[in-house]
Every structure is written in structure tokens, then in C-alpha cells.
Length: 115
Length: 118
Image (cartoon, rainbow over all chains, first blue to last red; front, side, top):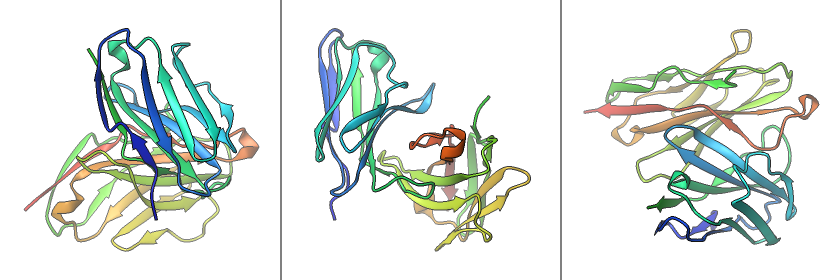
């Protein structure tokens, strides 16, 4: 079975440019999460969706960040304009249902460098 | 206050020895779930094991077991007979129950970098 698929795997961009990260969750999963990982802050939840609807975006750092999920099989995380401090690994993850024991499955991550 | 604390930034262990990675957590919710993930140098996050707060027995998955001590609020990961391929970052994570307003996502600790030496 295909896991969570993210693209691009690596991106280097210049400060001020727009960055779009893409994610395809596991088929049949109702929840989609975007996490960011940095050395300083570790893994942080940015936003998550249930059935394509954003539920909690309190982790989104600022208005430069936006996320959409137009359908059950696709989500984007956009940064506009990008800044060097946005350099991080961005993970998309999905899970099947709500519940304590519900496992979240991660993609391989998108490694973003803003220079 | 940190919800998940992993006090060992790094550990060196001889191959074939057992390893215990520490994790303590902080919640007032009686209902919660605890997870461990492995992140090898390639970067992906791999789910290892889950323990629910109401589970009577410690969770086990192959060479992985979770030493759950509820009163101490600790959920240590034990890896038996370590292998070179176990070298990775290990993250403890928690999901709090909905009664306490817990979200659907996981809160992660800072991780422990485990290095298995031959």
C-alpha cells in the first residue's frame, strides 16, 4: 500500500519566493496533518484537517503560511513570501479515524532551505 | 511546561545490548495515548509502538516494548537485542483525550539520538 506521498523532497529557494509543498495522504484516511521539524523547536503541529476541513490552525506561525485541502487526496502548504527562518523539514501525515490509539503515518518529509 | 520530556539527548550502546529510552509526560487528562516513533538518518518518521492510558498490560511489538508506569507518568521504550540498524532518533509523543480538550494531533518530545556501536 502506498504511504503518505510528499513533494518535493528537497527544495532550495531564495528569500521572498513562494514555496508550495504538496501531499497525498493514505487513501481512506480522514485526517491530514502538517508538521514542521527544526533543531530548535523539534516537531510542531502546524495545522490539521478532518474530511478536508481545517480543524486547528493554531500552530501556523504567521500569515505567510497557508494550507488547503481541496479534496480527500491532496493538500498543499504554501509559504509566501519565504524567509530563511522557514528552513525546516515539513512533514505531512495522515490517520484513519479519531481516537486515542489512532496511529499517525508520516510522509518522508520535504526538506526546505531558504537562502 | 513541556508535555513530553526526553532527558537523554544522546546514547551510545553496544550492539546486542538492551536499550531503554526515557520518556515522561505531563497531562491531567485521565485518557491519553502514548506513541514512539523512530527517525533514521534518511528522515522518515516510523511508528513503533502505542500504549493507551487504560491499557492494563505494557505494549510490545517485536523487539520493542513500552515500560508504562502510570503513577510516575513515564513511558520508556525498551529495545531488546539492539542492532546496528536501530541507530536513529527516537521520539516519544502523546495524544490527550477529548475530555480534556485534547487535539487529534500528537505532541512530540525533543527526541533521543541512539547510536549502536559494533
